[in-house]
Length: 294
Image 1 (cartoon, rainbow, N blue to C red):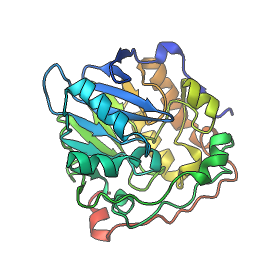
Image 2: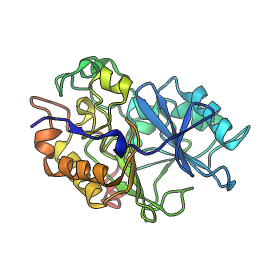
Image 3: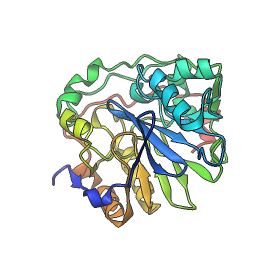
Image 4: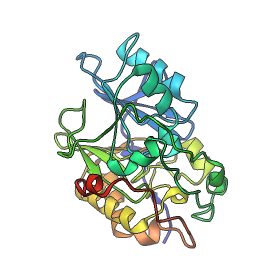
């Protein structure tokens, strides 16, 4: 079976171009693509509500994130919080700079905290997982921990998301031990992080062209494929109407849901690489912390 589940342009969410290189896909949701990864801005500037940043992009993304925030929310805009789906280099690259300069709390699942408090590095990437030039280059990607321990807080155990009323967080491990996705039941909107992605992340061509497809998590950085499969199945069961992932364009509607169900039902044939060998012993927080979130 092919490892591509195609989507069409009809499945793409309509986008409005905005200042600061932002693309708006809902009244309170916008994103900016930094090279290979999306950074998401939550909050409706028309309503003057607090806003939240979801993930922090690459190490070179900080100034661009600040610029986009000021365009969308006004000069001197500072978020109520930063929510981390996980701490891989392309999602946590600018978190130290932003947390320090904005002096705001950073929320993450407890299983991601070793990677956000300077305690542990992720194991090296697996260049054999899935092929493609980005996979081959993946061992060169930064994996040293970042340290935002003075701003770091656990996501609430009741599954609410600070600064995002009406949203809940869902544990979606596999790609990272403490990976989370964000869900709004009222309009069935899903912020999936890297639990699923909507463009092939191993291929530079697909990354540059944003080819719209339904994929499992990026292969070269996914250590636990059994957990990744369970996470995709859980997301498919939500029957989302609108999805944005950490990589690729937002997608919506029946075609997107059909593709997501096909991915969930055929995950091992479609998503799991042959011959991958990634470290399955990630750093873990204290047992009492992690048990409360299972």
